[in-house]
Amino acid sequence: MRGDFSRRAVPLLGLLFIGLAGRQAGAADLMDLYARARASDPTIVGARAEQQIAGQSLREAKAGYKPAVSISGQATKVYQNIVSSDNFLYQEGRNDYYNNNYSLSLVQPIYQPEALKRIPQAQVEVQQARSRFAAAEQDMIFRLAQAVFSFLSARDSLEFAASERMSIWQQLQEGEQRLGSGMGTLTDVHEARARFALAQAQEIDSQDALEEGRQAIAEMTDEPPEDVERLSEAFPLVPPERPDVESWVQAALFQNPNVTALQAAVEIADREVSRQRAVYRPRLDLVASYDNADSGGATIGAGGSDILSKNLSLRLAIPILDGGRAAALTQAAALRRDMGIQELEKTRRRVERETRAAFQGAMGGMARVEALTKSVFSQESAVSSKEQGLRSGVNTGLAVLDARKDLFSARKDLAQARYVFILNSLKLKQSAGTLDEADLREINTYFQ
Image (cartoon, rainbow, N blue to C red; front, side):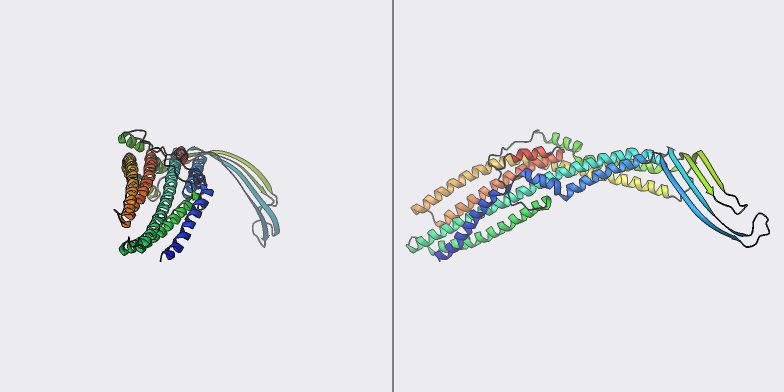
């Protein structure tokens, strides 16, 4: 039986060591993944396109108050056949001729209330697009960090599971040896076998979680990383820059890009109400035209003509009745403004809640990491004591397995607590609207 477990365990251990060695060779750091995500993440690429669209909308709005020049022409060939006529001006017979008409016109808006109000509205849309892009970029940074630390956490779980399995396998061999020498019990051997099988199942689950974490990174970077460098245990637990949560909340409500984008949306909706009301106002345009009418013949007489004309006029249009269309559009714009106000309020409340939660998570995370560090130290001492007790006959093999399991669990909790602390710190900065590439770069210095 012992040989059977050896044949199963040793290849798994070899695969683990090979995987660890290969992983370090092609591991990516946080900034490598950030560069890939910034170029490939669909969310950030879409937000970049939205910002460019807003710029084009501003160009379109300004074009509404610039002169418009158009040219038109028409060439006509007339085949005329006067069969009979009682009018002496019309001569019987065939007469083919052409008519060519060309026109060049210029329209310069002088007073166009809708166009005037559209320009500042489009300028606010540009500001809104910038806020949305900033929000998308900060969200991309946080999602990337979240995916990377989820991957690291899954890898830690896999390594701890493999270590626990090997520890149980070692204890199982020792238990079989002790049973063969009459110093152990069959119960200890059966319990160790059951735990070994359970540890194998947990290791398989950890491998699945690791692959899922790799694909989560690939969702943003367009390709799964071979592996990711480790976060050093020397990463410092730095508290938030401002120890007062209210200052963070006020900063978030003032400069969070999601909030500023919705504030711009409310202003855009308000300007849309004003623009729709401007439909009722008169419009005044300056119109200049140059026309050329060249005819090779006519139904009256036989001669042709070539007429040039130049016109300069003021064109006034006063809307009187449109069937209620403008009133309906104005009312719809007012309702959208009210919806935007409520959406802004909902977002402000959500941002405040997330800011407070992230602040508490960052502050509490420091204490949790410190407590778990002490727990790991205590568990290491407990394992050493249990192993010493096993050699002296005071403790059983099951007691040693329990102590080792607690140690692996404490180490895993410590690593997870460190990741959660970092994510809460990043989330706090994201809520305040200050999260940027420099924050990732600072964390990246502790990847190795």
